[in-house]
Length: 260
Length: 275
Image 1 (cartoon, rainbow over the protein chains, first blue to last red):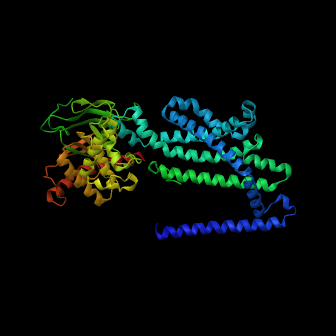
Image 2: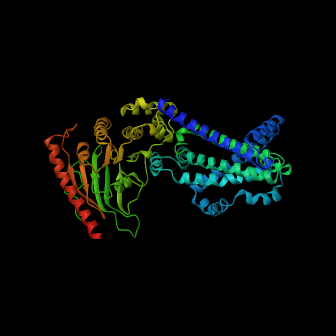
Image 3: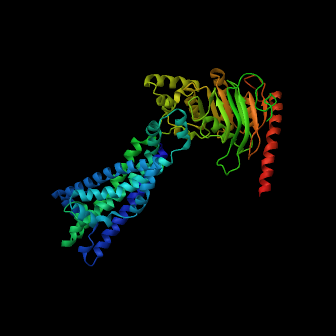
């Protein structure tokens, strides 16, 4: 690494640390001024409760439950979305049939479906994983479809000249050229998954970070809610960055991460 | 119908045609005016033919029709005894846009690509791709991806990707148009060297008169569109390698320049009248 890049990195890191320290200090000060401290726990007490929950094993269980659901729903939704996007991008008839539904459903948040899905599928894991797959599938499908439609014309023409069959054209040009679009769609979908998992667990669950937040209300344990909120934020940031770094590194040749 | 004698522009005086365009028209749809009309050209085997003309006159369309990417609305195009109906590995295009290289493949893999499509065994295609990369002087860069190469290097990769198949015909669509002047001259010299060894039949689209004179056996000048056609064909009877500074080069430049600029001025006047 050049010294200039190292310098820029230091500056960025310092900026983050200063910003976080200032806000935490302000939060600590304000919570001490609160009329009912119970309703506005300080960062220190939130941290202590978080530590307690971690030692009792409850926090670990909740994290595992939420992350497990997200990974299952995200994976199913991504696979379906890629398959749908590729067929829509490759066959005009499939696109004509599916597009109105996709455009309609992608505007409809998973939240709106929670009561119906519970009636249909009950309150177990299947219902929550279905909701998470739902929130993933359309954004991945649309991005993949756009990717298939955006393969540069000269790349297709070159392969045509070399004598590629339709199947070779798909495997050696269209699919690799679309990988970057798929990954962009999946990264956006991952954000959706974090929002949806909390909602699903608030309504119908006895585990997970959403449940931790919701159940705190009964005993006015605001700290518990704060711990849940903080954990979702940290996990979301961590998984998003981990996804970004892994895909950028492994899929570098497909231009993944070039725009971000 | 005029008799087909040697005075028709585009008709070579000796040797049977290897590529021929006959009474060719092209329009984008039946309601649009013809972009190209009555285009006639014969090319000999092993000939280097450069096509010049005002911007937008349809030079690239002529190339795309010979490549098999577009179909003429009237007339016939024959290459190597076969009517042109679809793209074929006998007629490989070198695009101006280097986005035609596959960015997810390394230099070596890009050159191997046509062999992979043809089902050549891995060891053989690797060896052939390496040989071809040596021919264009890129052997040291085989592991790099297109994004890590300069514009001139990328066009060398495209050339290698075409040469690896041992194709008889190369269709070059302003391949050096986006390069800086120095790189362009170096690549022109390399192309002359490579072609002295490989003896391809080349249709080369350009708007650079110097480039056309430096490279081509004959230069075709197109009229401005709509309804563009071949206006004049000029023989370049200079020995290779050619010296850009010679008196003969300069005289030829004046002649081609005059022919082209009459058409360019005509197109501009036409545009003025329309406004």
